[in-house]
Image (cartoon, rainbow, N blue to C red; front, side):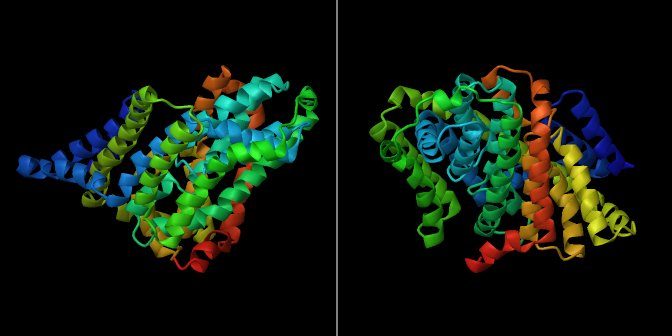
Length: 432
């Protein structure tokens, strides 16, 4: 009875518009109280304890720092210089600007761990540039929203950090390495339908008439941005610092580039940057801590074991169960953000992962690919929300374009399922 009430209360509050974190915490706390009605105050002590336990994990320290890195590089002008350098390499022509948007978003994925921050940084530069070249605003918003989804796969990744906290045996360095090849494949897969649609619908008619930046000059201007992922990922690989320490190094590097090299940031800009990143980090970490209460109620009320047995005994087999989980998570991803999906479903799915002896790192990549799909799948689509706001279009206008991009990234997820070495080879080679 109480387990049913747990999910019912959560869903009702969600439908009423209660924020996801509050719905998780209130539903979990209410059911803990009912389960301990004979010793109410003793039972309720578990609420603050698990609130803190959900938050008091060392890897989570990296989240505010990587969110701050995204805000700093958004303001520092790095994205604009990377765009000019990419255009100097690939040239001008139909479909080239959308390709540049995807490549730059992939590269910025090696700097910031936040998809919406990536969408803001790339969209601020590329959407207006694509508009001047003759691309429809809805198409430009679709490209930027989809491209920014590669951010949570290409390290550093906030999603991988959250997953590592929830799952034993999946370290942050191993997850970062595992996401590299699928992240690059996802970006390359997005280029195919994007260029095809641009040429099929004769978009970008004015692009060939726009000037092509000089290669050497644009390279010199972009060199500081190009060095950022080398510093962050290379430093972690060399053992100079942990992922959490790498986030702090990236913050100071971004401030140095923005204030001393490019001189696009002033001290008065720091308050706004810190405020924006502080608000976003607080939302993420508050949801994480409140989900700790929900996860505790799942385990103590005996919800997980019956669900695991029902799925395992369904007769679908290993790949049938995996297909069912993907279908379920794709549906959920249309309505919930990635961090919430991890916090709600990983505790439920972990016993299934153990039953089938799936590699936790591989499963984390599959789950993150699903979350990446959800980031630009209407109606929620957090990345599309950002890019549509910049392009000043309604999300409904992007559906005709974004569908093909969803198919291309879905095929990458299928490839990682069929060939697990796409995710597992690199962490094994690096000794993680």
